[in-house]
Length: 328
Image 1 (cartoon, rainbow, N blue to C red):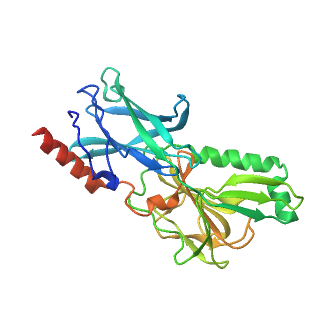
Image 2 (cartoon, helix red, strand yellow):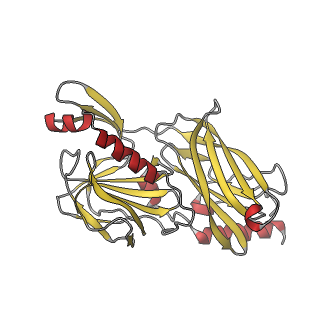
Image 3 (cartoon, rainbow, N blue to C red):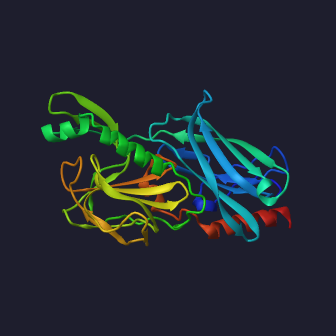
């Protein structure tokens, strides 16, 4: 597919696109150039040859990678091979321009000589202000959060292994997410800068990685999208916890439940009940903590509720407009 220079207002309802023009043999690459910290960078690649693997990095001005990820195939759409990359932008990133590097390898999977391509672009991460708050903990919760316990480390490592697992064929949900609770008061927002004030007078700073919904204990919690249950167990800090896998590298998390209605390995539909709101683990009152991770990075969960994660009708529009401009 020849490289075309123009702006898309199509894929994922993005505001703009960047196209690589280093070589005519390179694939079409489409993504939004300006994002807020905490957003998700969604990249479409239309390779002109079979791809075996697609990787990407976002690097700061010193050349240090701040985000790494892998792409997955969406198969052929309108006769064109289509790949997708989802990269989470951490909420602590500085406002600046970052380099985007995408590398694709191809050939061996199709029995051809090894070939590949490298794309070099940039994105602008905008500043976003987050709320600061203090949370006062009693002696019991202070001890729970601050006391060293090897089980907490084991649980954290186990969870991290899950959230950084990439299954290229795990495509369960492509539409927008639904909120796990409706008409619920929010007691915490994504990106809040929290200072935990311990009972002994010391304190610790933490970035809140999800959204908290304060509702009565026992309120049913629904899956935000279709997916596979990859964790359903009690954890010391987060209490009764559930993690769903929706797409390669994309997971949703539900903490502090009073009970679990699903088991690891189950497949759930969007809106299916996972459990009930509770106060288990490190919680000052009944609430649900809802979180979304992309390749291990916590991103703003609401960014997935406004539009389809993978909008194939817009992908088709891009393909048809490209063909029209090329005169094919």
